[in-house]
Image 1 (cartoon, rainbow, N blue to C red):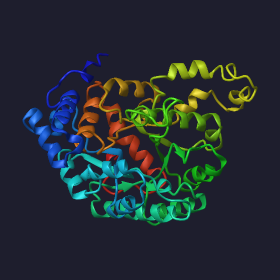
Image 2: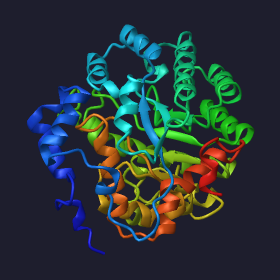
Image 3: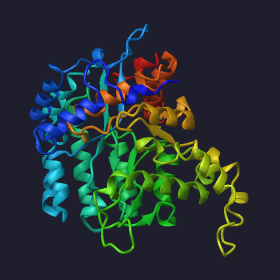
Image 4: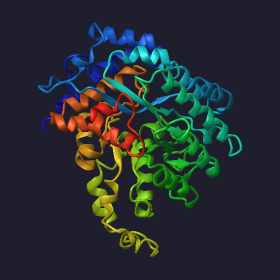
Length: 409
């Protein structure tokens, strides 16, 4: 299959052209209005969804569910400004208006009337802003804010995912119960580590167990890594933002490996985890992972890993394919093809990572749709990616969401 769509200009603004326009216009520090203006200057007008998508003989899908995008509710943003010790975090947030200005977000989304967004809390997470005494309050403010946005704009934001104070497990369990039971959250979001501690730490197991066995909701997993995670032992910090650009996919991959090899999926076989950036490094390095982990223990001087594979109930690669991957790949159709080959069409979901693109909102939506359409997939596969897989995750444990159930009808 020819994946040259990734690098060539296509009708409308291509990913390459958009990046050039963004760089020329200084969009990294521009307002949302400036981003839109730069987009227009790059091609003369803002493209409609129909112009962005490859023409299809099938009828248009009624809905595209963006399962992983980010917001900062205003009350939570105020707490971030008060408590964050990282000036870069605040600079980043304030430079992206559609992250916290929902009227601006709604206006931006008018370009795609078929897109509905399931909201997740943007970084920073509650546990990174406060200790275990105060992080539960931060999580409550965040979830109340997310629920309020969904209530105000139900047709555009039909659901949200609960944030948890992961450095206080009892409080996290209580907040999970409240957010799902009282506010209507359709899942929980966790990071790939908690203050540097791995997710297979036994202290965190009750959170996975509660979400899976009591509430039956999926888990959104987001990578987290900081500048002080240096790339070389001789340096105190990571340079050139490698910690984020390339460190995030590594974080995701490492977290998934810890979940698999610790046996968590044998203990919780119905657990569903949605991985950001389509599983990180796993789809591309799937062959390497399968052949080298099959020799686990052969490279280690001790015998601590000799029985890991034998202790699992099925071949270890089958566990990795139990996860879900989203389409957040910067618009790369080649990378998406890799993710589809690895996870299969039943375990890939449409998502945008909005609004963290060079245009501060629209680019990742537009290019994500373009990457799906450029692969020449059958309509049934596209339907799964755009909506059906997401609906099965969102509706698994609760009554169907108003305004979304008709897609499966």
